[in-house]
Length: 303
Image (cartoon, rainbow, N blue to C red; front, side, top):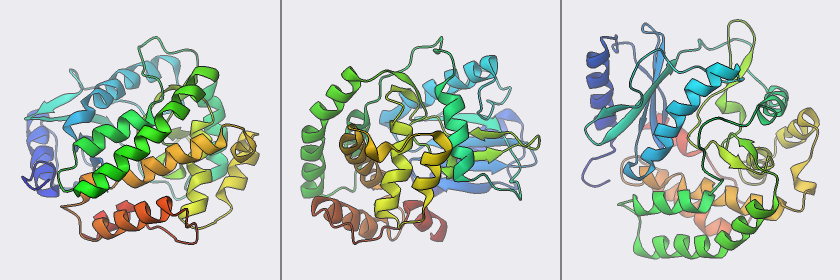
């Protein structure tokens, strides 16, 4: 990102330009997330604006807009796309989507809520729109290719990891029952609406694949971000412990790859991310689970 394509300054410029185009207030904008997407809450306008920070993942943004319209049709346990036409929106070489804003609830969603919501989500009807198959390796390769600040040796190590994992993922997808998968299922992607319904947000990774993909994120996080007992609670609420599943070794590796490459868009722009990326890559390669990771988002908040 040495040329400034995805810096926070540019994301805020994009937010302001989109706000002007839509005629909505952005003065009270609050940064919710600054990683693979720049996500801004605009409370006075009642919307959340998501702007992609990768030119190679535009297909995911277009998919999210299509999904948002379908979710409303089937009353899915998800946030709703804002009533703005022609989504996704285009700003220069960036894509953005606009969603309804859900005011933070004092009764924050829990892991128990996540288990129940995922059961409902996995039982939705087959989508009437085209969705990709679960492809964590392909997504990782796109992020690696878009990471201008990635060192050559690290790029090579990540691509070799992709090469090793890809046939295992393909075999798992071929053998599994394909269902609607959120793709990034954790409590941070839950919201509690004023009517008390708990809903999912962030559909960049939504696809068709093994349902276990959505249970693996919390289980893998327990390994690397410190044990909190959340995996046990999720397994109880959902009704299945993914770590007892034959697919778990592949699901774990795929999630670890996602955890590591998630920081590469931020290497040049966010202090601390390069060191965290180095820690993650080295500890995974050495299988050193005694190391505790810090979320990349924590560094974005500090910058």
